[in-house]
Image (cartoon, rainbow, N blue to C red; front, side, top):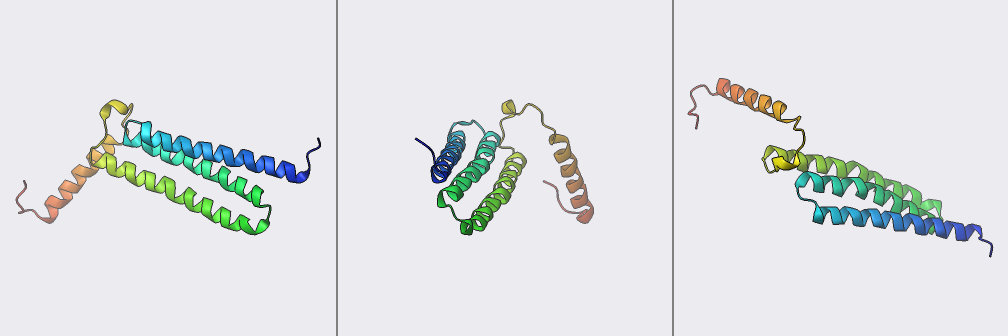
Length: 135
């Protein structure tokens, strides 16, 4: 049995779609299984962005037309831009609100910078409102 060009395109599309779906499923399982917010953030962004790329590439191969390529690229770029930014904002909010378990953090490089910024903010607040009652 000889494989034709169309057969190869279908095989490549199927492999890419399956790999993309598996990576997206891994991201979902990571959201359910990981113990803390930072681990869940990592699980939701890293495999999800690559999984979507593979799935969209598989879709591009399956449709076999160049007309959908710009739409697929825009969809992937939107995911590529928004997923890491939103994960960064969630991580920052979690860190600043002290909702992290210190047992899951090996090295906390941000602690000194946050403490210094908090001190600077408090000093600036005191300079702007010197007679305000501190509680």
